[in-house]
Length: 199
Image (cartoon, rainbow, N blue to C red):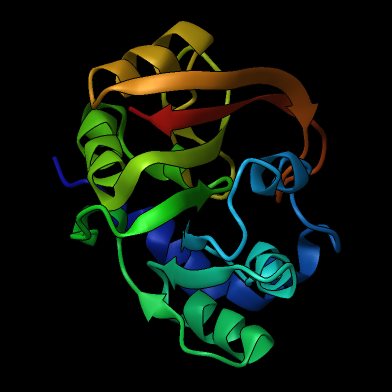
């Protein structure tokens, strides 16, 4: 099984402007607590940066940010917002070794097929320096599946999420939050946000 879903990438490529316009104007609710954990001037990988809202906020806070997205149209949109290069890269193409103080993955790794998620997380672990921080948010659920737009989601339980992380590397759990959040489609649903530190 590939470590990405082609139909999901196709959706974002085709509907990139509509998707970006439908999103919230502010940054992720978890961003502030994430950057509070980081040293001054930390080097951050924004993995699946979307339209670049969080990356712009991290840059404004004085961090060194490398923004990436698997979708060329989305990367182009983020590049215009950030006025800097945004790398087109799928998660399974991450080949860094202990290069980053932090990896931010807001509502992005939730598209990785369940069976492949531990392998992708292991690439995140490898990319972090020792004591590096990783934060990611996922839609919660019991069974993987697709939404009405055809996008794939891994829909993880709390236990399933932690099992994926612990099988992929040596992590210290900083926090695991359960909350109600929205998305591209109307309405709200259950989400999980996890913050961990590489041992």
